Length: 534
Image (cartoon, rainbow, N blue to C red):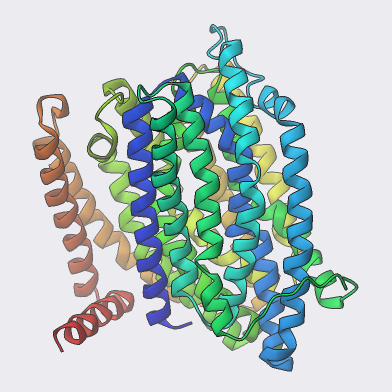
């Protein structure tokens, strides 16, 4: 795994996540913390869940694992037929899935809103709201076809050590969603009503198309020319789908938790679904920038190393990925927990998004922040089981995690009548339990995982994190004690000051404590700076 590749992917994903935040800001300003926004989030829930599973989950992991081994064993040219067969097969399968999704959208929407009106509260969604949600769900289902093909192309490029353009592909999704969505939406209804939301749904399709098309030139430069190939009786294809079955289940834990959370959130009241969604997307920012970036670069290396068994090379690649994620993600987790309200206020509090939305979304963000490090560790750890051909272990653990999530949500929301913070915290606790079990299993499989080095790093980072937490608490007390009385510019400027001071404190203490990853990061930045000056 190259640190240069990791940082390149991180930069590309960061750009994508920033554009994603801009997209969310537009939604928040147009539709606020209300039922209309809840309708869109429910409509996009199932297609988006499948996107996360395929784009950053089972299909990508299984394909990259098999394709990388094929390239290493037989050479790049011998792997192209496998790519053509998979593109043909996945294209046909996802077209069928999209058609079924369109046909059964009413049933899916009614399932996701089944708990609305329970827990002793009035119904949130009227019949018109349900009808709008069904219409938007049908519009967005073909997005599944586009993003699945984009995920396969991304896997091909990653396996050939091309990381930058695939990581940037999500930027094109967000750009398409923003430009086409707002353009069509405001043309249909400039007053931000239901028709505007229909336009935003069409924008999702435009974004999916952009995500696929932007990667095709890079694929062509590698020498790949796609022609439909219907010869699917290939051992490599059976291997991919054999890996995918358990991977779909194990990688879906967090996403199923999100769907379950959405169901329970409909019983909490208006805006709860949107608050959870915005908080979850903010939590995904550091996961995407760091966790997914490290996992993207690590998986091909793990797959190649696993050809020689789970020996020293395999352990070194995996352990280094976990340590790098720990160093990069911990400050994000602390920042999201201790600066939640200022962050939500600066990003969303304008237009139709009000103080109530800020408070509820910040509560959910703190809950998700608790498990941020565990989420990111899982992004690196789970693919290692597939590379090592131990795919059933994450799947079995996933059953336990899903059962724990459903039981906990039922207890906290239905019995204790708690709010969105309970749903988010439950998701975090499930991720932590999931990681602990999988890490213990990997220790046995790999005969050690440089755990001592990871514990030493965590001990040092606890000191850096404590210092950073102190800065965040001081900022919360003296800079953000009354956000409602501050202008948007003042809130933004003081948040930049607080984040900069907190980040500098974390990095500075890490350097004093001789954290190797901090030195590596500094050297990367220094080399970039010198190169730009030259």
